[in-house]
Figure 1 (spheres, chains in turn green, orange):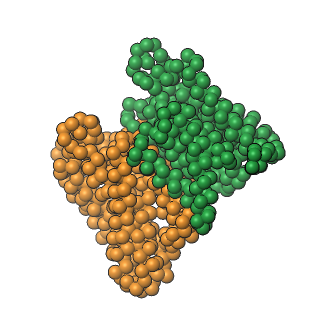
Figure 2 (cartoon, rainbow over the protein chains, first blue to last red; figure 1 turned 120 degrees about the horizontal axis):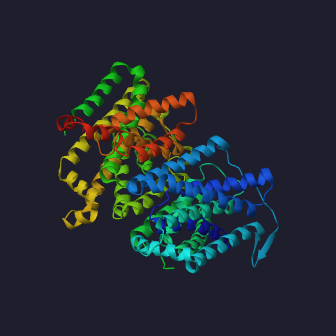
Figure 3 (tube, rainbow over the protein chains, first blue to last red; figure 1 turned 45 degrees about the vertical axis):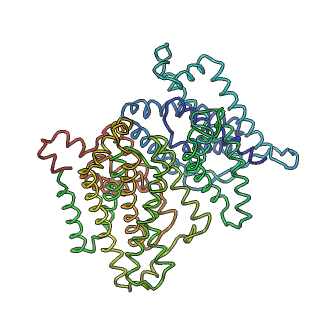
Length: 284
Length: 321
């Protein structure tokens, strides 16, 4: 159950990655850096202005969308013709650039905060209300994004571009605008995910935290089928459960660092899925 | 293509390290970047696939020497070649496993598959507490015991520098051999159009795997010489440090991807640029590296040597591979 709750937030973090890959066919290899930015927004919002995480979430969403637009204009658009290698390397360099800038601005220490608004009992288990709120935000965002993609004109345009960029252009869709907005939305949702994540890691905010979440997001995105929105969310839930169970089993087996082992397993899982079923475990 | 100029540079640096041991650490630092760029180039430059878990190969090399020195005492001087061989073998084996799975996938999917290799292995070593776990392996006492104090100190300075330069020189030869053989043409065809190459009867996975394993073995050698022999210690936080892949790419892109002389030029410029930044603005080297890679990839995708070659007459181009 606690696995499902953190898994919901994992799903949220992965939505942006999947959206960007689905539309632009670009793997954002620096995904975790934007999670990190969201986490710092939540941290500073809470400690400096006393803004509760939901408020910080809205701020982070806007900030992330702006950053996403910038990433599109500075990296993706000029390098679209230069080839995949250049885009991937540039995005990777940008991610480290962001992490290094964060380290120089805010220092390398681990930070965190706690936002306690009581807890709620869900059957056998008592969960903090803040975590439930984070998980619900994630669920609402995922469903909202899916509805947006299915019901609005712009959403249909996005899906048309996913199916066939050239065909979409032929029928009068502004493909570049779809690219721009998808990148902005993707990164915005990711920073929002970063804010919600801080509700689960009371002392885990650090400039280099991104690396782990890049790995986790890619595992989840590949599990759900790269580019699939609901697939990413559901795979996030699965991964959350998988991680909690893995943590439990590894601590029973007497490993000193069960969390680290669970991450190693995540990596093995990634390779296995790519080996046997690179299109994802299920179709959604 | 004539590989004499790059080979000559490595030999000259080797001679310099022996003639002036007090400068060998400096030469080692410059040569490390050159050889790293050289090794990365064999895979990334020749295939245009990018491996973000590349640092794991450096780590495997370093752990090879570390494990032999720590867990197999009494080998004496033989511990060095045995350790290096183990390190190179582990790097090659890792490349074989990852490559066999991931090289069947195209571009972005390959990059995704490799993204976890580095973090995953680090978490395995720290999490399962093997090979010293999070605390790492400290090799200085083992090296003093096995080699004797004088020899150990010599090995950690001039010896390590020589090994790094040897790795660079082997990389030049390997690049030459690959490019002037069937494999080079196959890789060029794959780079341009993988589907067309497949139709022509080329097995893309086989040639990509060849480049990948060559590149990985050289990085293993490099990791063994630089971290284990040179610094006499292997810390997971250190050998799995993600920035090394960015360093390698910076050197490669600066000099020019898929050129042989490129990484030498790139390594030289990169080292001194980094050094300068370190003096002017300490702690900002990584920031500047990331910025540099970003700028080169966007503005000068062919790199210095690559751009230069475009403007040289064909005869001169032969000499500047």
